[in-house]
Length: 199
Image (cartoon, rainbow, N blue to C red):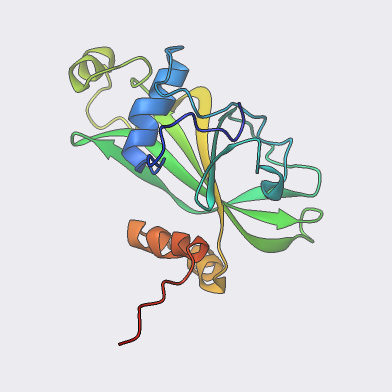
């Protein structure tokens, strides 16, 4: 199934962070079917990012896949290195997940060359596995007030894309995270320029 969408013509896969966590990752972790079932499961450390085409779900210049969380994110030619701070994913005023940002580097550790390949890795937070609604989420989560959120489940969902802008790496090196608008502008690289008719 890798790479095929099974979506009707004209439909595009462009989920928000909240939709990825609530409608896909939560159901995957709870062993419930995802509808539509279009995001494949891949070993995170088996493929280099440029090998995802035809294996992960491609949507524009982005690739999506489920994977098991692992401490080692090394592939054959490099590794994914976390950058910046984790970002909370919220739904209905509650934190339901974490988004980690990683950049792919080629070569051996401490001698690797950073690339423009970026991965957003989404994790569930404690108390959110199997909760299909905000009400059931509150019932399942008995976290004490002031207790920090914790990651739960070994499942993650990943979004991988390549940026042609050197500035994206600079943002991360300064512990700054890209906003949604930044990602939208970066994704416009794959679209051909539109020529307006001359008067």
